[in-house]
Image (cartoon, rainbow, N blue to C red; front, side):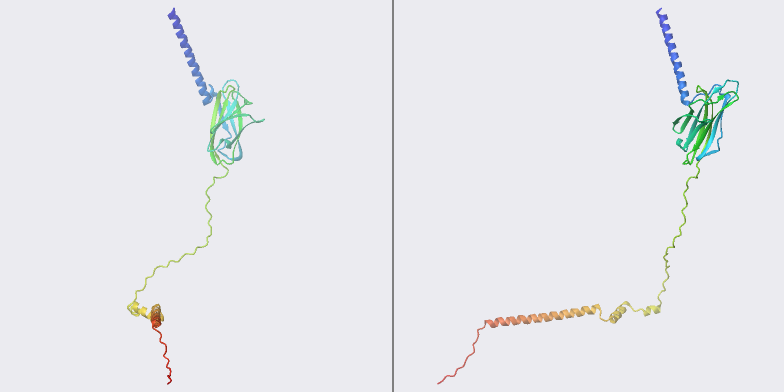
Length: 289
């Protein structure tokens, strides 16, 4: 009895683990589906989406383009309501340089906008007013414009049609170039300026000096003779002045020495005369007898 009860408990545990694994696998699939985007409908071959009104390329500025997303259905199925979602992906420009609005006949259609990096998703908050039935279409209209400061880039638009249960019915994408209204700035060539001609120095080419001939050599006096002639023709030169000054100084020196000697001798004679006894003159008197 105990073994049978243990076996049933083991089987119950195994069943619990199997159910838990199944639930985990289902949740994992649902989570992956939510991240990657809703899975298309099982009868996706009966739905088709296309983009119309796309130009060959978009031009930045105030020019507004109207783009339409059209979903159609073929077959004998029933009618469904549609919820649109537009996915924008940009390269070479920013999302804030893109302006997109969802419009209907009554005016702007409310959107829920989500951005992540260079990708933005614009999803209708409400179901489209139209109803998708076999052999009929439902259209979503968008107005697109780009900022004036866009120079060049690329934009990819993907229109996705969902049913009320957020099941993807069909999807269509297209990529277009975006160019600016003005060409990109280029480096302007410098304007030529009229400059006054600068004076150029004339380069004198060295000329070959003529070699002196024998007659010219004979006419040129030697250096010594030239100096003598210069001294003779120069009159009173430096050398003559030096000699004259030297002679004058010598003459003055000799005169001073002779004068000094004379003064010294006179002074010596005066000293010797003072030491001698003074002789008084003898006065002769007549004796009377």
